[in-house]
Image 1 (tube, rainbow, N blue to C red):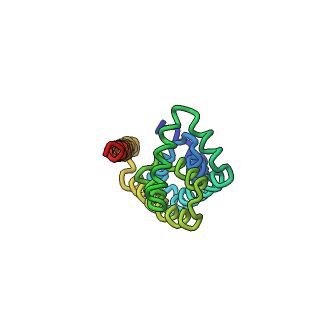
Image 2 (image 1 turned 120 degrees about the vertical axis):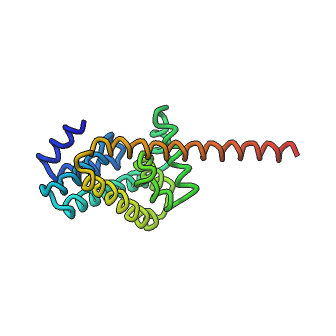
Length: 201
């Protein structure tokens, strides 16, 4: 995988970084984080400039998020229902909905970097549930700034260890998502028990 990504960046440069960032925000399974790490490594080697890599990744991510938001805004509740039909997607859509419902714009911010696997689904849900566009846009811009800076920066600093860094960051993000899911499940169980207690009283 790493060699393939290196080959793509070497051949297509910032264009493939932009495309991967855009498409990954629409829930396509593209290793954009690894792509940005690779871009950072190419910056360190002097083959690409930091600003061109950072801007292409940032622009692709923001435009992809905006596209996802407006797809959700257009599709509304029927889109959410269709997304939830597949068992493999139902849980992640549910967690994305809970994140938007409970945190609003802050949930959008966290989904762009700390909880990146939920990001595309949060985009759809934010649009479908009517989260104000300006709130979505502000938090999205801030979050993507963090995401792009961190990954391109790590690729620059650890240019000889991109695959290792990608694996570590994947584990960290996976742990954060698991903790959020566990917290959400705990809060749901607590709410159910509380309502039952009130009903008995």
